[in-house]
Every structure is written in C-alpha cells, then in structure tokens.
Amino acid sequence: MMNIAMSACALACCGLLFLMVKIAKILWWKPLQIQKHFESQGIRGPPCRLIYGNMLDMIKMREQAISRPMELSHDIIPRALSFYSRWTETYGNTFIHWFGSTARLNITDPELIWEVLCNKSGLYKKSVQMKELNGEGLLSLEGEMWAQHRRIINPAFHVEHLKGMVPMVIGSTSTMLDKWKERIESGENEIEVCKEFQNLTEDILAHTVFGSCYSEGKRVFDLQSEQTLLLTEVPRSLLRALISRFLPTRKNRYMRKLDSEIRRSLRQLIQRKKQAWSLGRSSSYGGDLISVMTVGNKDQQQQQQGMVLQKGMMSIEEIVEECKTFFFAGHDTTLCLLAWTMILLGMHPQWQDRARKEIISICRHQPPKPENVSQLKIMGMVLNESLRLYPPVVALIRQAGQDMKLGNLSVPGGTQLLFPIIALHHDPSLWGDNAKEFDPERFCDGVSKAAKHPMAFMPFGMGPRICVGQNFAVLQAKLILAMILQRFSFSLSPTYTHAPIPVVFLQPQFGAQMVMTPLSQE
Image (cartoon, rainbow, N blue to C red):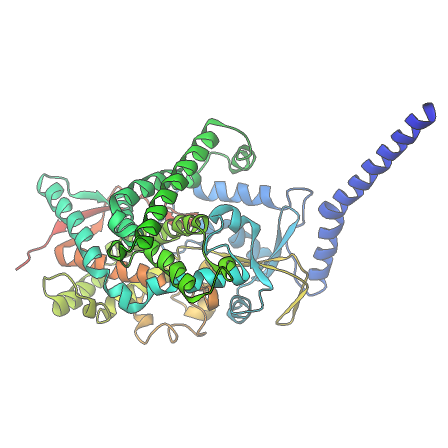
C-alpha cells in the first residue's frame, strides 16, 4: 500500500515538474530565444519581464501621460502612444516590446506595412485581443468566413447605394442644427459637440442598419452605446481593470445583462425581417444593412439546389455579430472624425472660412445634394488632414501565423506586428518638416501625392481588409460639416481642454466644447 502511495506521489511530482518546465519554457525560455533572435538582426527593445513582459511599464507610462492635459498642439504621440514615444528614443523606430510573453515588433516602414496588410495568404492574422474586443464580426473574422461576410456586406457600401442615404443624413443633421439654433437663441452659445455627434451618428446608424425597424433598432443602439461607454471608460488603474474583467463584479454582471438584452433584441428584429421576406412582403426590405445581409442569404439560397451551401450562409448569430460590429466601428469612427475636424477648424479659422466659401458657392444655402459631395474639394482636404493628425485607430496589430520573411527581417511565428499609424502619419521624413502642423493643402493633389511615400496615409487601414465603411464615414462627415458651416461659425471654447486619448478610438478625453455663432442665411 505504501509503495502505491509513493508511486502516486512520484507521478504527481513528475507531473508538477513537467508543468513547471513547460510554464518556464513559455514565460522565460521562449521569450529569451526570440529576444536573442531579434538582437542578432540589430533589433532591440526593453527587457522582457517574467509573466507581464512590459505591460506594467506601458500601463505606468500611459497613466502618467493621460493624467494631465497638453498644450494646444498637434504633437500628440507622447500622450496618445506614450510607450512608443519613450522607447523609440532609446531603441529606434523598429524595436520589440512584450505583451506578456508575446513579442511585439514595432514597424513604421510603409513598404513593410503594405507587405503585411496586402498579403492575401492568410498568414498574418488579427490578434487574439482584437477578437476579444470585437467578437466574431467582420473586424475579427479570418479566411473564407471573412470573405463570405465581406461579399454579402459590400453592396451596402457601393457608391450608388450611399447616395440614397444622403437625404436621411441631411434630415437627421437638420434636426440637430435646429436644436442648436434654439439653444443659442435662449442664450446658450457653448455646445459640447462630442455628445451631439454621438446622438447624431447613433440616429443615422439606426436608420442605416435597421431601416423600417428604426425605432426598435435605436433602442438596441442605445443599449450598445451604454455598453461601449462601460467598456471604454478610463479606469483609475488599468492593471486592476485587467484583473477585474474576469471577476463577477457588479459592473461585469450588468455588462453581461446588457449584452444578453442586445443580442435578444437583434435576434427578434432579424427574425421579423426573415419572416417578412419568406411571406413575400418584400416591401419590408430596403437598403438597410440587415436587409442586405438577410436578402444576400436568401439570394444564395435561391441559387442552390437543396442545402449544399448552408455552411456559406450567414446565420442569425452571425448577423447579430455584424450589427454589433457595425455600431462599434461605424459609430465611433465617424464621431471621432467629426469631433477632431471641428476642433481643428476651431483652431484654424482661416480654413473654416475657406471651406465655408466653397460650400456656399456650390450649394448656396441649401443642403448638399449627392452630386455636390465630390465637388467639396476643400472639405475633403480638411477631412484628410484631420484623419492624418488624429487617426481614429492609432495602431494596427497583426500576428505572424508561422516563421516569416518580412523584407530583410526574419520574424518568428507567433510574433505580433504593431504598426503605429499615428507615428507614420506624423513622420517628418514622410510628410516634411511641418508634419505636426495642420496643413490641408498637402492633400490638394490627392492622397497618393500628399506624402513622400504613396502608402504613408492609412487612417482606415489598407489592402483587402481596408475598412468596408470608410466611404460611408467620409460621406457622413462631409455632409454634416458642410451643413454646420453653412449655418454657423465657431471657435474653441475657453473651457476646452486639449487631451487626445486612445480608448479603442482616439477621442477628446474631456469632450469638445465649441462657441457657436449663427450665420445669416440670406
């Protein structure tokens, strides 16, 4: 009996030793070998600390950076991407740092970024963190599933289809501007435009996604807006947030309840769309995103015999994920673009005047028509410069699926590649000595000629996975800002605090307060 107990103890000890060796290999030996591998290529970085890597240093740098506002300038990298700003001073533009035991290779060479983002082999994948944040929608899917979803969703963003959305965007914007005028006439001339644009973009998205089910969809987006606010609020301690996300706290329980309610409501809306189609009530379908996804599935069904391609169709759960993704990406991207452009035009009134003169010369005092949008060249230049200085996403991450050759670099499988888009957009070697200044004139000959490298500008990414909704975001921004400029002049309020902060998307930490002055419409 004693021999059996001793054997069991010996086996347990061997198992524990094996587990400890395996953990040591993952947390210490493998990172050490990867670090030596990159050092042999002349690439250095901060030392990898056990378990956390460089995460604690990054958290500390970020908390220090956002703890105080900055002066009114566009030199925002030290605040928006503090770890990159600090470590490039020591290790150069290409360096590695560690997210836990995972190596992240920081790259700013546009040629190498292009090579990765335009690679169609599927060997460079989205990071695990991206999937945790965005779920299983278009932003996170890979391979054939991504291609299938993209093919179904693409028609919703064709140019001709977008033109049909112009009246709806104009209607929602007119309602907002009428309320602004009433507030100003009552003596309230300061407006916090971030909150206003949040409501406006939610209103537009609800129409875009849900169509005739707009009012029910608006309620879903109200819930998702609350969920996003809870997800993206800046905690006192990011380390505490990393730990508490796995605990059954009151906030976590409430967020799970919100998510359950959002999914339930979306399923009901989608089911009603499908039932209406199956009963022949095709008039219930329009150009909204749910209709495009649902009709797309129905078209595929009609083209097939039996159930052969069922695996290639979007299920209700997949449509739910895409609706959530569209709100998450489409809402905040447009909101941030509008807010930063208003701030920039408030800081640079000469460009506000130039844009207004062009708009009035083309549209007079009437809302822009679909054919007017492409004629607003100055507005397009201003928006591009806003996206350059304040890109919605400050960095992109991909992960090497296996050992890869990238340019002259040898990259081990599992390495994450971090592309600091904001650093690329602010690089004087690409944009000239005035790279940190607001100068829309640099885009007068188009995007490809604005910088010294044609791939230096990528606010929506690039390659096959470029943001599907980029044209819709820019269209909305052009229409909304054109209508604002027709009816108001504006400047930064004395209460405005300049504090860009990346909370998923780059946004003004304390809002965007503007002093608005109505213009004569004669």
